[in-house]
Image (cartoon, rainbow, N blue to C red; front, side, top):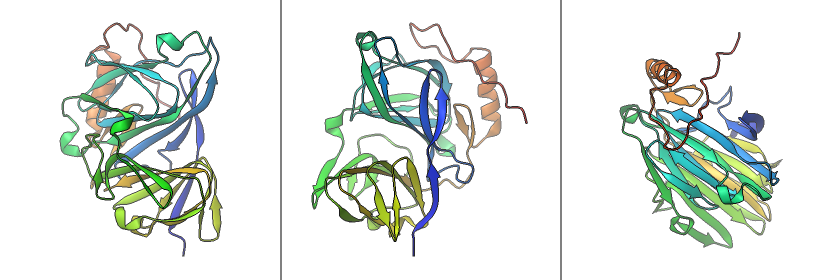
Length: 293
């Protein structure tokens, strides 16, 4: 019997001047464990006059995880952080009661051809931490736990699994795992997983039962402890999930909360521009207009 309850196809979405593939949320599945949002950026070939420019915008009630495969992004935030993220490293920004940040092509790359490819992920905070003070952590690629088993490469980008712990400071039980294989292999890792679990195919394919699944799909498991599949040669997949929260979390734009009034307050505060500022930045992304029904 298949252990797959839902298949989510990547959908195009526009973030300012940059197109991405949106994977979560989905109308039939708003979250997988504490993961509430996943965007696949690129792969995008940017010419010498094309750059990523996402002006200052706010967040509440979540942590953002940026993980690049190719390219570079300059992160600036209202805490005063100014840091370049490169492939394999992790930017982990916890918004809590409110943070503002911008994401741009670094100055030294703005007049040359470049690539940009990666994942941007939102992880909701537990109800009791939604109003915590914001903070920022950068973890270098060499500090991410990595190992091999039977020729298969594993990387624990965030959370705990396989008896290992990532240095990314998460706030609820979760895992975000990279699996790469140069050969076709059987993968059985269910005894290392818990809670809800999803699998994203970046490249290559996997086989589950009699079905073959290709890139740009997320597979949601019925039971994470039964996670078993065949990964084909030269494939890369990501396993993500964890314990779901007992209460529903709501999303409006960049705001996540279990309390709708906190979202309404964030909307008012952003419109009034009373959120903290990003030093050296004067632009900002306006609050989106409500969609017409």
